[in-house]
Length: 95
Image (cartoon, rainbow, N blue to C red; front, side, top):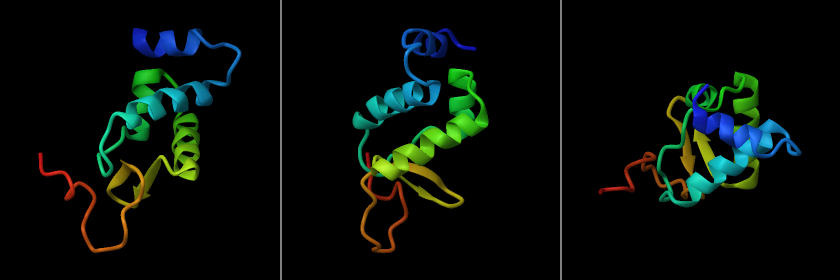
């Protein structure tokens, strides 16, 4: 497990791991622009050394909060979800 992930997990033993990861992901997403691609389940599994089910729980929780939205087959993106105008996620960022 990467040292960074271990530090996040060990620093807050009073909170469930999925909440610690969600807090870290929320912090990262706050620095993103709406529509930016968010880390995948697999990247969270590798970085934080968590189970895939835990990563799914993190994504579901962030989606329920409106922090991210998911497009089947494309991934999860920093929220809020754009209006249904036909544009694909990522098309909004031209940098």
